[in-house]
Length: 295
Image 1 (cartoon, one colour):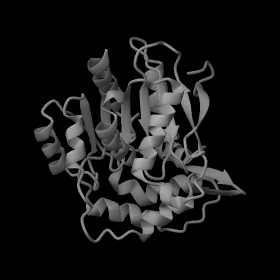
Image 2 (image 1 turned 60 degrees about the vertical axis):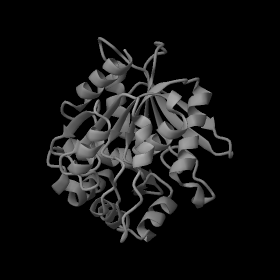
Image 3 (image 1 turned 45 degrees about the vertical axis):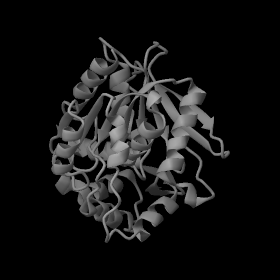
């Protein structure tokens, strides 16, 4: 962290094979070794990870270089003129392109929600790229209740004129699932999710992403990803579940542990979907897992 207490990072941009430019941040010095790469959720961006990334980069005993990526259509990355390309396989290809451009041959990955689905694809396609993986409130089975909750709040057309209103809105929608969050946490979340545009506060992602989710039919169960999950079999793996999550069930986590006996399990107390990873003991748990996995 910089001397004045602000985040200390270097911005980067990478043009992927289909011509779109993706952007992100690198926290920490070029210290060698294996970096940590963070992948955000459906309508979220790399700012979700900023406090954790700074904490890992500043760790006094074993710091890590941390890379946070804004997926296409999110945050500072370009919006895709072809909305049909907002898919997990395409975004997995984007991660591979970013890693190749930044010279990352192997990394410990943290994937929140959709970011964890991307990791399922990467584990199947490029297991050599993954030194260790943390799945944040996501697994091979996605619960319909959680999908319907996401669909409902993405479908709300709420007018927000400042970040205080945005924080209050987030607390009103998600507060019952996140009793652990303070007022400052809701403010921080608002500034990670939203941006100011033309005097209003709006979600910092392509509206087409939310529109596709709102229009989706979740009446039938989604296909599970157990075949892809098997690709993690020989990789160090950690699963974090929000205590009040409706997207990842405790039964799915138990089955993940049965299929991957070395799975490291952690619960984000007082949080739902998806947990903020810089709260409570989660940073220390993640750091310990990564150190024990890759040294």
